[in-house]
Length: 68
Image (cartoon, rainbow, N blue to C red):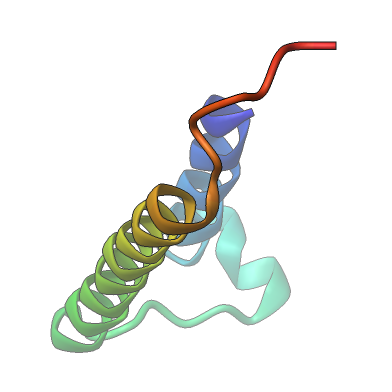
């Protein structure tokens, strides 16, 4: 699932730079804007993973549960 997501994201990022991107009137982003978008996305991923770790560490009972 992660690999497929990465593939689709890569195609979406590359499409404006490909010759066929003109078919859809796509315009490549400036490198600064592209770097900002990728940086914000990376920060979001790090923040959500950190929040999940805190949540599950805090609210998951670790004693007395048996698998069904």
